[in-house]
Length: 242
Image 1 (cartoon, rainbow, N blue to C red):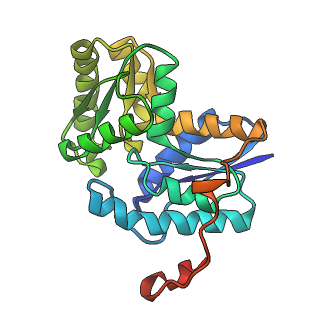
Image 2 (spheres, rainbow, N blue to C red):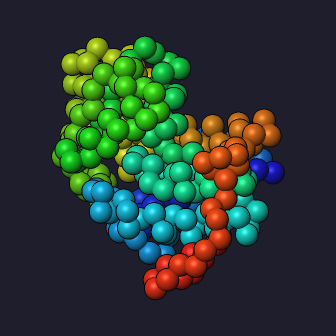
């Protein structure tokens, strides 16, 4: 029995529930998927400030998962906040949804487009494409300028789907990556509108995490991802003393 913990780094519980449904829909019957939001953090992540303040909550959930015997983790925010730090804490694999989605997209075509939320997050998506080695495969990052918490509105959903179709045509892409965990359940509709493979990072990361566990693989503890050196943390961070 594999146990995967999917962490929504924001505190919007309705989004956490939707993320959980998508992760469980693709998980194997023998896999337990636990989906959580941290007890502290922003209600949505739409800036570097939000992302920085989301990381302590993510790390607290990873630390709790280690005590619970969790086998692997998915960080369900397209900025992949706290990914490196979480890998230092966890015994098993930790995957970010942007990382997983971009990997999947390059297995399905030569180029992909990303459709995301606010324009101010476009630079972060490009940063991650460069970091993960997919800058040449990523043919465009397109912002819907719809806030994360508004994605549940039917009009927002329709606008995102239209933008996805436009992005694929404009970029000449073979695949499309949904650039927000709040879009996790848009895949079927976007696929019908674009006729290309549509990748939701929550689903991709969940299946990749399962595969790594089944292969007996974990993040290397040699060098950068070794456990952090013990030291004291002060003030609000005193509980993070390692």
